[in-house]
Length: 314
Ligand SMILES: *[C@@H]1O[C@H](CO)[C@@H](O)[C@H](O)[C@H]1NC(C)=O
Ligand SMILES: *[C@@H]1O[C@H](CO)[C@@H](O)[C@H](O)[C@H]1NC(C)=O
Image (cartoon, rainbow, N blue to C red; front, side, top):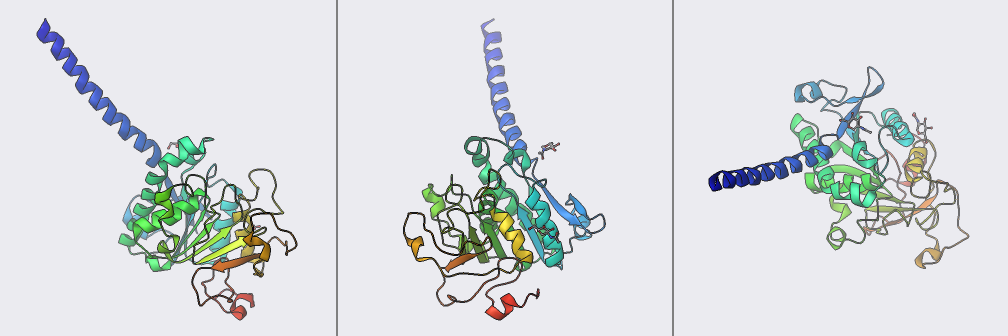
């Protein structure tokens, strides 16, 4: 009887261990198993899943010989977000090559950013890094890669690319990278956004959801010192949410850099500088390029004034 009881207890202990391990695997699956990479299919003119097989991938609309772009959305977003669709079509028109979207809507659609999304950041960044490694193994050239990320997606673009390899990706455009959960984490503050790609351009539009850091190769400050926007409307088009809209509009509208408003050095809200939607000033961290103009969207920088304003896409 005693023997049987002990066996019973042992059985339960083993079962508990298995259940805990299984539960852990299931939790990881719930995060990574629902992340999808989609690509723009030129035949059907829509987003389709990136093929699981490498051979099919290489034969798809995304050719390894071409340049590629990856769009990474933010919290409470997905491929159904208005700006994502607009950006896919703007990229396909203005930047030939492969256009992809990292879709993690199962995680991002949670209301609870701090408890339900942020804890998965590490896994999400690994999935992006793994995707980049897969693409490289198929023959895609990271030096022809361009990643756009918004909010948490901007942090993912930076961290996923760093894990893939320091400055291997050609260019990252980080649109109002998320501040909450990042700016107050000392380990994160040690990570240099400039290491994520050869050219890292950050566009800042809000102080509440956006990072307060200004240490990309180019940091654009839109509106009021990059802290808030005159055009802000209720969620999802507040100062933060407008960032990808500014970016999309820069595909078709000229972008006029303006001088850094003197008021921006102080903490109080300043008045009196140009408030046009598409205006911003840049503070670049690399000495020697100061004074040049840089294009906001698909063109490579640095550019001379002439190249920025001639209205054609190289
Ligand atoms: C979440 O994942 C399930 C299962 O993979 C899928 O059917 C569903 O479309 C996903 N939801 C979103 C919002 O992507
Ligand atoms: C580019 O984005 C804008 C939104 O700013 C949208 O109105 C437009 O249709 C997009 N362009 C293309 C070619 O899809």
